Image (cartoon, rainbow, N blue to C red; front, side, top):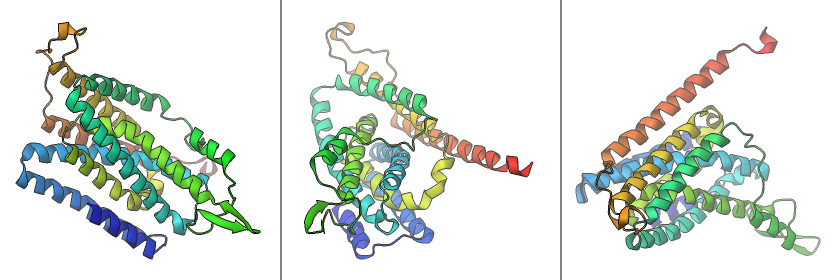
Length: 317
C-alpha cells in the first residue's frame, strides 16, 4: 500500500500535466480493478465475511469520496490553482487525508474495543449527517467560505497573491512571502479532516477490523485524483447523489444503533442489559443496500439530467 502511494506521487511529480480523458480512464480502471482483486485476495486468505466487509466499506468510502470531489472542484476553482498543477495539489491533499484518517482509525479502533456504547454516538451522528445532507441539498455550494484555520493563517502570515509553481515560499522584491499554495493545501487538509468525521464512523459500522477500514479508505482515495479529472462536468449531473449518500449513512447509522443495543452495558439503558429483540443486519444485506442505493441514484440522476438537457431553452422557442 505504501508502494502504491509512493509510485503515484513520483508519477505526478515527474510529469506535471493536465491528464487526458484516456489516461484518467485507464488509471481509474486500474484502481477499481485493484480494489476488486484485493477483495478477492481477502476472500482466499481470510473468508467471505471479511471480503464482503471490504467491498461494502469500499463502495461506501468511494461514494463519499465522489461527493467530496464537489468541494475539491470548488476549492481549486476558488483559489485559481493552475490546471497543470492540480494533480500535484490533489495528491498532497490525498496524502494528508490518508495520514489524518490513519490516526483517526487507530483512535476509533481503540475506543470501540473498550467502549462498545460509542456505537450509539456514531449511529446518532450518522443519522444526523444524513438529515443534514438532505436539508442542505440544493443550496448554492459554489460560495466557498474559508474556515477558521485559513482565516487565521491569512492574518498571521504574509501571503502573496500569485503562485510560484509548487513552492510554498517565494521571494518578491527581496521579501520572503508564502504563496497561495500553502492556503490551498491547508484548505484541502482541513476539508479532508471534516470528511473523515463522516466516513470513519460509517466504515466502522460495516467492519471493526482496522486493517480492512484503512484498506477501504486507501483504495477509495488513491483513485480520487484521476476521478476528479475524469468526471469533470459529470459531477453536476449527479443531482440525486446526496440523497443516495444520505440513505446509506442513515442505514449504517441505524445498523450501528442496533449493534450497540446488542452489546449494551449502559446501566441507564434497559437496566444495563442487551436488547435481545434488536435485529441483526448481515454484512451481505448491507452490501446489497449500499450497491442498490448507489445504482438507483446514479441512474436516476443521469436520466433526469438527460431529460433536462432535452428541454427546449427560451432561445429555441
